[in-house]
Each structure stands twice: as structure tokens, then as C-alpha cells.
Image (cartoon, rainbow, N blue to C red; front, side, top):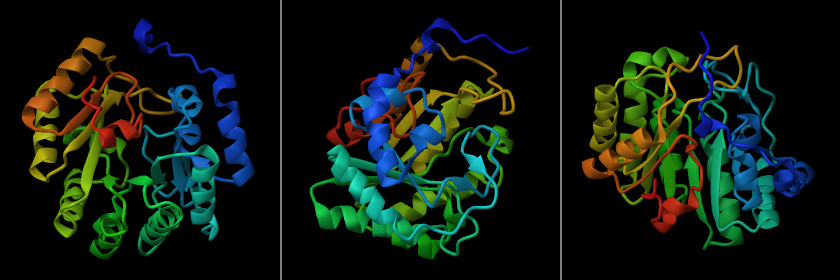
Length: 286
């Protein structure tokens, strides 16, 4: 039986607030994960000119059952994509840029070279702009991860997503491999900040969450987000539990006590939600 959304999860999308940003992105021809993943924060973020750019096209080679991004055979790479990202940064007047991608298992480096070129274009334009990457696991390709770790981004994120027992929702991904990705990034470049995210409400237990948090700390991941999983449609894996806001706050406090540098934990928190606050040191506000 499908659970009804509780009152605290009835966030409205205000289409007028996001129209200006959407028009600019449409003119440039760039994708955002905000639009592709049907993020409930889209009008809030777009009204503040915050956006997470999605590169390597809009079609993912994996079939995770929680995600709304297109799945199937991707098109050829758009060689102008890095320039389009840089153009969008200028058009929106961004000071902190977040770039993510679909998973491209069909590419030898998983798209690492395109991430690098995006960062280079932004930094060449204005070196004071900070850049955050949210990458797929790149099959734990060490050469690809070396490109990412040394590309000039200040923050590199890779989402652990859920507890090991529930990893069947992450088709083609492996819990231990995701931890290794985060560890490898820090080993290659100890100066970068690494970040990860958990979506709650899939049936995870509290002791399992604590174990994941410790596993992330053990691989020197210092930035964390936790948010409520919301099924994009009836075809996606269903929500098992709606976690109360007070519980999210408890988990956030726990993560801080355990040793995370910055944490954002609330029902509507997403991987890149208000990402600039992490860099400014304000993300411990749950």
C-alpha cells in the first residue's frame, strides 16, 4: 500500500520563480540535474540562481530504480558542452558551480576528461569561482579518478546513496567500490574536500545508517547530505518510510558528533542543495 506524503513534504514548485533561469539554460543548450531528476527544490534554487549542471548528455547507461534521469543508449558527446557550462556560469552570475553527470560506462574514462575541461574553462574565465563535482563511480578507474582529483575542483562528491543491504536499487554500483572511489580521490589529492549523500526512507535501519557514516569517515569523507527519498513515479522503487524532520535533525547532530566537518540533513536536502553553504562553512544548519 502506498503511503501518503506527510504535511512537511508538500513543497510547492513556483514556476514563475524558475522561468528566467530555465530560459537562459534553454538558450545555451545545457542540461541540469534539477530538471532531469524533477527535484522539488527547483524553484527555490533557480530563484537564487543556483543550478547543478549535468554533463555527458542526458541519458544514463545504468538503470537505478530510484532515479528519474533518462536511461538507455547515450548519444555522442557534445564537444561544446564545457563551453556551454562556462557560458551558463556567466549568464547566471554564479560564484560556486556544481557539475554532475549521467553515468557513461560506454566511455573509456567515464567522462573524466570532460569534467576536467569544464573546470578548466570556468577557472580560465574566473579563477575565484569555486567548483564542486558530483561524479559517478567511473568503475573505480584509477587514471580517470586521478584526472578528477587533480582537475582544480575544490570539492568532489560521490554519493553512497543507501546502506549495503539495499544496494539492489543502485543497478551496476557496488557499496565497497563507492567507498574506494572516495578513498582514492583523497589519496591522490589530500587537499580536496570529498562529499557524499544518503537518501533515507528505503527501509534502512538506524544502526545501518551509523555504520555507513563511519565507513565514510574512515575514507576521509568530510562533507555529508541526508535527505528523504521521494519516488519520481509509480514505476520507481517505492518509499518505505517518511522520516520526520526531527529525526533528520538527530541524524545531522549524530554525523557532526561522529566527526563530519559539515552536514546538511532534512527531508528536502539533496546532494547539491545550497551547495555553496558547504564551501562557506554554513551547512551545519539542519
